[in-house]
Image (cartoon, rainbow, N blue to C red; front, side):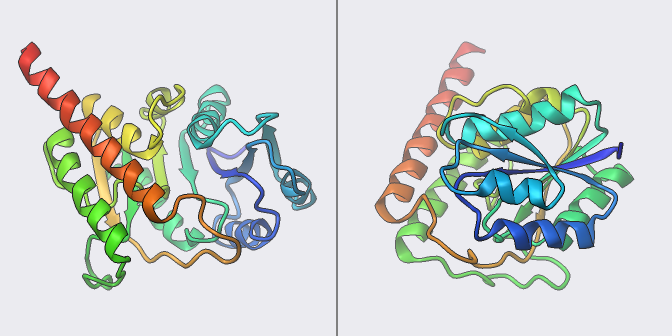
Amino acid sequence: MSDTVVFIPAWNEEDNLPAVLDALRAELPDADVLVVDDGSTDRTADVAREHGVAVHSLGTNLGLRFGIAAGYRHALEHGYAYCGRVDADGQHPPRELARLLAMVRRGDCDVAVGSRFVSGDGYPAYRYLPSPARRFGTASLRRAMRLALGRPFGDATSGLYAVNALALPLLAETFTSRAPEVEALVRIANAGLHLEEVPVLMEPRVSGESKLRGSKAVKLVLTVAGTLIAAKVIKRRAR
């Protein structure tokens, strides 16, 4: 067994999954791979098994917050030292995950999160131009994250993660928020773990449509932002 597992939450991603699995095998040949099938009604689980990777089925469509926790719980229960996460739609290049895992392995941080919106060497600013609606939602969430974490964080909804064993118990518990990535960041920060936001390149969804678009995405972001601000205010009053 490898010391590293990469899990992929997936719901009806039979078209996108083969390329993701092939790229993972090429970039991280020594890592174990797990597909967390969130009650897909297509051949997602079959495609994963045909590619020789493990499948954990949730049985019915429970939602992303359950799928993410299940992936981290698998890593925790099987004693992995490192865990990565990519989405099944092809937006997270495995070569970028390999960079994040290398940072965690070196001890640069406990958790590395890939970001579209921070810049760095070879990663220019403003390389992604979201729609006006999404830009408004992202800006609102960014301000709320600064309050919640006590530091700037540009891409709070990123699903590209690399973590070490210290983070696994925090992330294996089922998330209560409709934005589990945001809740994960708050858990990590509250636990005092070393969190790094790392510039990466992401790809457009290969096929199909995002399950979170337009006004639904903005509404979710604003709801989460309001929740984070309220939680921060309550925490300060309790001191």
